[in-house]
Image 1 (tube, one colour):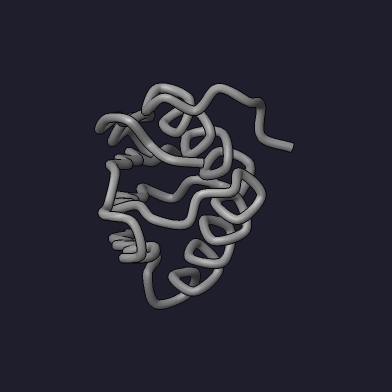
Image 2 (cartoon, rainbow, N blue to C red; image 1 turned 90 degrees about the horizontal axis):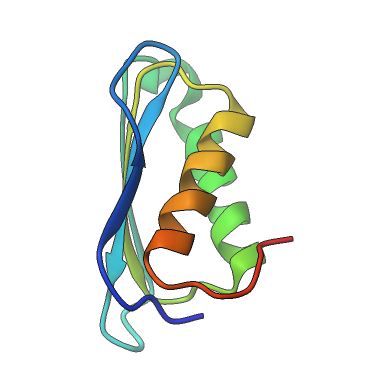
Length: 94
């Protein structure tokens, strides 16, 4: 899947996250930036949830920024899926 425009979803409220996605040039791969209030404990888990969601959506080249405020995995997935749909993805993510 190729992203058509920059988009975001979520908020910076407690137990939520703000996710931004934007197109990257073809062949540049995924560039994932994560900031979190629980980075030491869950930073790698947040990255893994994002990678799994992006892989399931078929996204190969994108700039992804996640600013986490203690969101659970299902919230991170939902925010990322919504941002991808807003950025021009047509097919639903499995």
